Amino acid sequence: MCRLSIDTQRFNNFKDAELRSIETVSPTHIKLTLALQDAARAFDWITLELDFTGVSDARLLEHEKLAYVDMSEGASLLHVKKEFAFGIGACYNIQAIKNSTLYIISQDVKYQEGQF
Image (tube, rainbow, N blue to C red; front, side, top):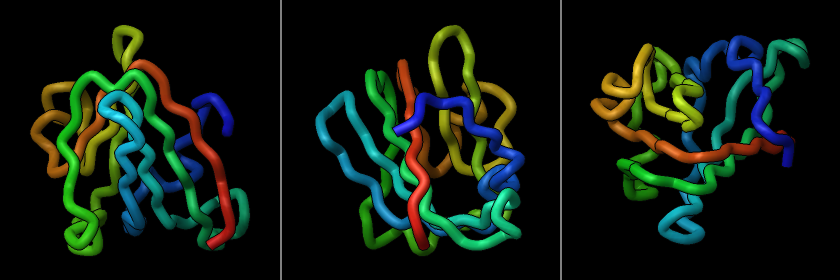
């Protein structure tokens, strides 16, 4: 796992990504797996696992609903006041993220790239 210094533009801000899974490891630890295109690999599809720790707030979806989430606007990942905020859609602040279909607010986030 790499500590977050992820270039979201490399992944086109998660536009048209597929939400693969959400795993609640504990109430303060959530893993989110996406399939998306990587500009650094000639837009090949890869799997990206985001590992959120120190989760303070979240709105999650049941696994069977993930395939129906509209990812045409992508997702946002912000770092504000020592917190990371991930939300579906083009969100520019924490309040907008908290209004999204799925969101996670945490103290730390790491990521790992994998094969499609």
